Length: 155
Image 1 (cartoon, rainbow, N blue to C red):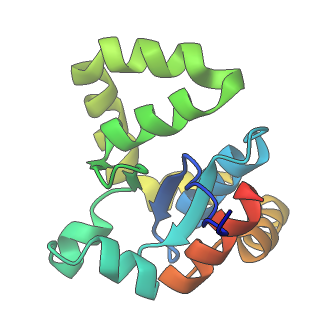
Image 2 (spheres, rainbow, N blue to C red):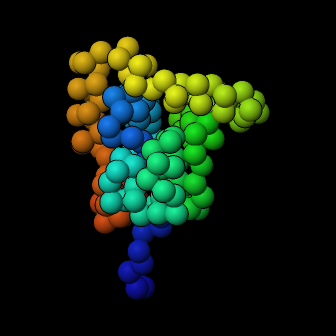
Image 3 (cartoon, helix red, strand yellow):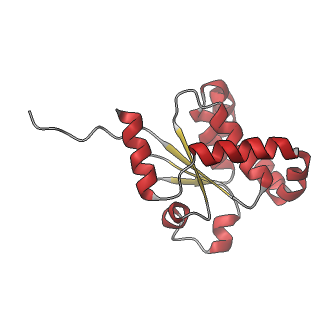
């Protein structure tokens, strides 16, 4: 029997603004709760972020967080937050509620996103440092790093 490549694992790539303390903290918050190792974090500004968001202008890329599923479909803003919540066991019910109330979810997301630098000041320095360490250890920056991570997870 010939060796076969391992099947691709269901992953959700979470793209966040690396220059935003609140965004880094929020991405790390989700990673810490990812018991099934389903989320993969990447900065919007990374080569992988540029590749996955290549059809958007730089301003459009940074306007919100994005989530890209294994099927290649991209969600942005409130829809991305909904995907992340649904992917996590502990918050899946909140994700389903957010999906049902998507207009409200979008408004809440947009309100927080418009004030993310101010909200980021509420996140303490130590919390941001912990988030940065987690993103450094579990995040990816390139397509090759993503593929290696998916192969490790599938084996």
